[in-house]
Length: 93
Image (cartoon, helix red, strand yellow):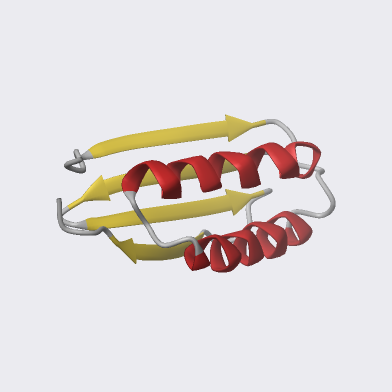
């Protein structure tokens, strides 16, 4: 199945409160784009560190997925902390 270019973003009022949902969402996007399953562990680690830095949920959390040019770029920022980013190479269609 060919991978299409897309941008998907999400803004939550309390990132830590939705930790499980964010992990499930990341897993679904990785699966839908054909990224390897081992990428989920790296992405889950980034999510957990970012949410911990957010001061245990005392602030907004933004998550952005962008598939473009053969890559899936994911950016996560919470409570005014610097954005954490990771990139996965998308499989050839």
